Length: 332
Ligand code: SF4
Image (cartoon, rainbow, N blue to C red):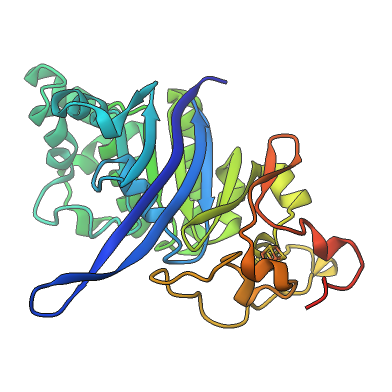
């Protein structure tokens, strides 16, 4: 499969300023040496706790923030190095769906205005063709033509997220960054929105970067999954391989919190001890070691490098799948 997007060694740090002169006194290590790719028409799920850097990656791809170093290759062109005009053209092909559909829609605008705004601004269609395109967009996301006359507050949460998806589609994007798109919705509505995204992908061939903090939604929609912890990718694999043969203790902990439908298959839920360490001074060695039940002296001093675990499946841990060996944890 041809890559639509390739992220190489992406890094982003935010300065922490203090004092009357606002001097930089520290840095937040938000994204450190992250690499992954997304194929044409593919969904890559990015999962991890709040503050692990996954939303920052979405913003870097959208160029809402600039990376310190690394490459964001979109259709072979490095977005970080494109001149402004070329970047604006490419940016239209990459859209975002936010977590809070209500907050991302102007409450004073009718939906038809919301959906036609971008088309008009960027002159994507002749003026007389816009109403038909708006009707088509509403239809694509399962709303009625007449819904274009309504305001955002007249919709349910799930319907509002459909409007947000329709607005993203109005630019005919190739890639949509979905930042926790179902987290704010009722559980009963989440599956409907996920099914809509999957259906649109099949019909339009659009790719998704699907950002979430829970594994269940990611499993539902992703072809491949990357697990992030404190600014770093710690494991990445095709979805089935990750869910069946996960090898990183952090992935194990995340997966242990996914509820099983069958009560006979209940597994032990792993509660991670302690808070996520501060990204201002991340722990040395393996960043996960203060919370890892298998940590040994080597983990505290030596940073684990990504290593192949299975086909197209890698993990950054000194003792991959240590929890499956049946042996005790390495010596403390
Ligand atoms: Fe745990 Fe060590 Fe693996 Fe890090 S490298 S996840 S501390 S076992």
